[in-house]
Image (tube, rainbow, N blue to C red; front, side, top):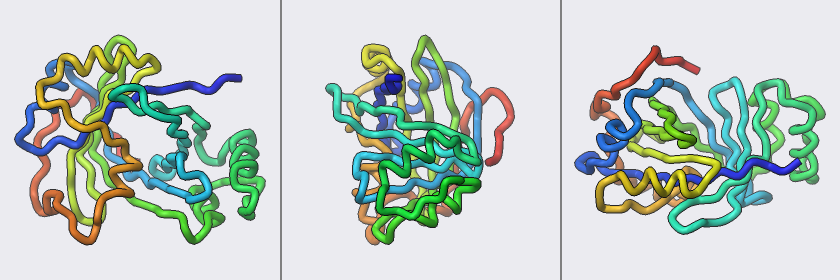
Length: 212
């Protein structure tokens, strides 16, 4: 069965840039969520992005390349805990040296068998998600290691859907940087993000926030 391909543009604008406001005008109101995600990076699978969404589910994406301005992802699998047997088998095949249990009941079971070279980042998020004509837009205020930043993304199964939405955003065109690159490349010992004491900007939403 062929795996789903996703095309993503993600940027990290500074506060004075108008991109977030333009996103709201283009997509309207969205649905808010508050949660903590954990990002795992293993040297054994350097192109994989393993994300624990709160304590409820895991998502695994494989970065397969670039398409112009966009990052191309292949969806390896998504599952709530306990993980589906098919996804556990896929993990066992991908990490043959790991002592991976046949049952993954909770996030700790998944984390415990990863090797010592695995990087792990805990990211606290306030997120608003929008949908419009086959494109999902997301605006997040994130906190990592006591620092804050803002990011927005445009994701679709079609590359042209994302690029058409990008055409409505104001200049300058910001560099496309996915979560994995941003987390792993940032010099956390010399951060230049906004200090944690600074307040978040208001986020126009539709619906109540969910806490995971």
